[in-house]
Image 1 (tube, each protein chain N blue to C red):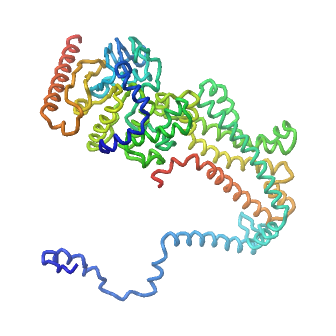
Image 2 (image 1 turned 30 degrees about the vertical axis):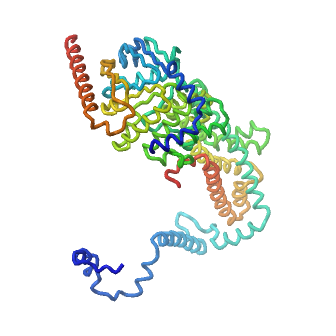
Image 3 (image 1 turned 45 degrees about the horizontal axis):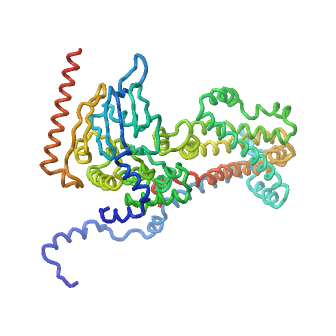
Length: 295
Length: 290
């Protein structure tokens, strides 16, 4: 198109070339240019990594000089020593055996807690009678920490293994029951009405309306339950048990292999986070509908 | 959604069922409300929501329940739906006493009544699935009725990704998928903007022309009531009672051009006057008794 710009258009176009916005000092220091190109997100992660690195350096310094001011670093292994011990542990089968034992206990206890907890929670949410029967037990037992159960669990359960699993199960159970019950009780009256007017039976309403509606609460309960399960498991493993990451950590203390304490601690943190993540990931197909506008 | 493509879509409907429900238009979808009283609360907190309501609706008739908020029109609708039990009087649909909700009385709610965890198609297929047809067949019915409301492209979307008007179209399709003889609608377009609302009213009339089932439609909008219905039943508040029954003899099919025609405006004026007169009358009666 070779249409000449009509004079009418000219004044309109003129302001689009902002003469005044051109910096009067055109020569900026060149060194500034690349620093500005680091995206803010990357920069923030750099700062976070740096913050951690500073802590590591301080730790190394404190441990190697035997810093002591109320807190004693004399017996705390240096990060370098921990790293070296970690390499040794990662190449030994024993370490994985401990992790495997812990995971197995978590697996059994959590599965039991999930099945029983969701069932009890649904029963309580749906039936006032069931709630009246179950709730007193929960209110009575819930404030008792898992660690407090250890002596009785050892006395009651046929083996040490089963007592650890029992304690772990108990820890996971309460968050699952309570969250499920809450989710079920909060199911939408309107959606239940809609389902009834479409010919749904009581059972169908439970499956198609109540449980899907409670699912976000149930998943939260399961994720919290998984966290508490790890907490309870470690209490059990430290006090009784012959394998497991909690036992590994405590045994490292009694055997004066201090770098392994840190390795145990990090493994516990990592595994707990990983398991909670797995629970959320496994449940995410059930909550696909919650992602709004996801195309 | 124009009428031609819509009729095309209707070609996929289950014509034997449609024919049955239409041929039954002389028999199916008769609503009878006799001396119905609905009260909430007990003793001191007792509140009369619907007082001595009497109403006969012929099969295939489009009736609007019109009145201000809190006049008990939704309560009366919910009583017909079977969600609310009257404390006195008799409620029958096709001779059967209403004992609870049922698929032969399809319900369309004001908003947010779709199952958010089901896709649009699964929502529409829910009724047929509950009726015991297989999953495959239910899905087929779901697709057919989504086509009817022009939302075939969204069958796998979740309801929350749809606009309010689209969600209401899904709600209508879901209620119709059970081939109900009565369609109960509780201010279904109340939450929509004016433009969408007019379009939805036209679509509803198009659909109703094909199904010709009985429609009981609750609204507080006089324009909407006059535009849609064969008859306007006016209710008044505290206590909620029927105060007028106005026939609407405007020609069908109706389109939004009707809204500016003298006949429409005349009828609207007549309604307004009647409602005003009845309301004043009611006020006087109340004052007299006090």
